[in-house]
Image 1 (cartoon, rainbow, N blue to C red):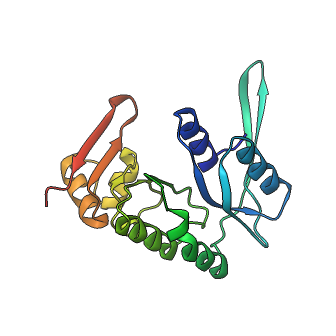
Image 2 (image 1 turned 90 degrees about the vertical axis):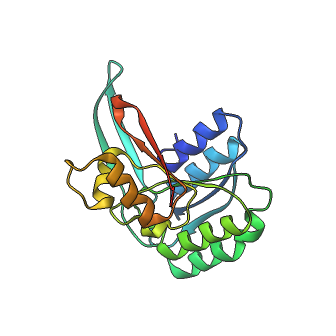
Length: 200
């Protein structure tokens, strides 16, 4: 089954959304299988690009008696090559025509380069399309201008570069200032979700 951002796509489909996917696979059997699985769900996959020398991530789960024993991951972190990056950027205006919302799921594999993120978010803002970003890493500046940013609690503290003893309100102010988002949604496991808005 599709995992990572592919799983996000399946969740959106289950809510009744029509999905246009932007992503990267390798020129391998796993990339073909992933694109095919999404196509069978009526996902628009024309902007899932295949990169030479990149291996599509594959996660194998070993299950016994309905319980996962171990998971074996085959994946690599590799920047999106510049020609594919420019190709996607050049297609954004047409690709986003009729789109009502953009979900950015960053898994830190190198596809969402700062250049691509900037182009995507800027184009979305120009077209009046809200963006919801699930971030990765410690530098949220690359998501500058996103409408909503949704880190978990640990990610929020790391991005703010503040100790865990700091109040979440102060952390939120730092994160909102860093990425200039309208809303910060911090997922807190069993403690629920905290929502902060940019009052500046």
